Amino acid sequence: MTDYITTFYGLSSAKCDWCKRVYNPHPDYCEPIPVKRITLSKNLSIYLCFSCFETETEKSKLNDNNLLNRIKEKSKTLKLVNLND
Image (cartoon, rainbow, N blue to C red):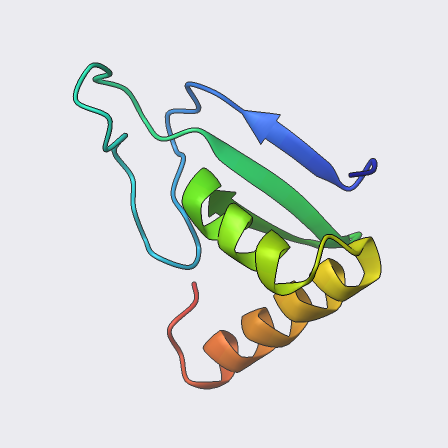
């Protein structure tokens, strides 16, 4: 992956923009979920938990352009139906 994806651990405001998960589901960890920030444009970033990120990566067949396009389209769709903050 390239410069537009950053991983955050222990971010107190961490929340997945797709599944809305905020707590780490692993039973051994009592902390916010680790998230990946995908920068779509200068003013727009999407935060995904590792599970949602892996799903999007698999569906895009590990191609960076396909991944960005999938995430942009899904973000637009969620915003259109008012499911994304």
